[in-house]
Image 1 (cartoon, rainbow, N blue to C red):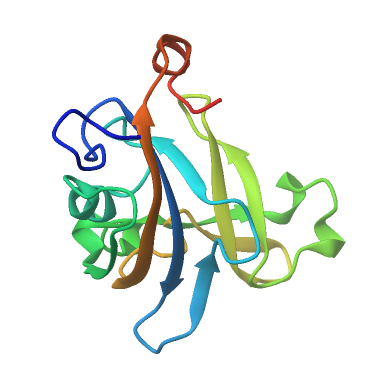
Image 2: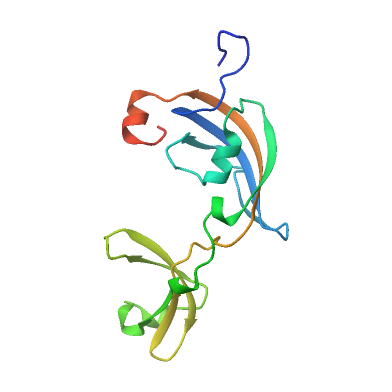
Length: 162
């Protein structure tokens, strides 16, 4: 999409941005990637992606590629030990199937669905972790901007890309 000054549209507020990306941890293991899939598309500035990546995208345009390391404070937050807790095994519908490392869904006190990681399974209780699985980790992104366009009124009203 050309603009009047001859370049491509720059990423900024209320633009739909599409990116190809690969996310790695500090050891170089791939955690997530759009390779072989559709690019990730989102409305810039509405909190759809982590702050550290969104900040790095500002002002970029279609065709730009970059690598960025995002510290926990600008990613999924610092790891918080206080977010680990235990519940009785009877809280689970299929308690026999619970295994360490599983992720389960639960509703928090505000009624929001939250993903919890099973840290340990004991005879009558389960230790759960409410931290995001990537909390406390430095995230390393390789990104290529594939499209930047104006968001439609409908997309802005709904808060997501159509």
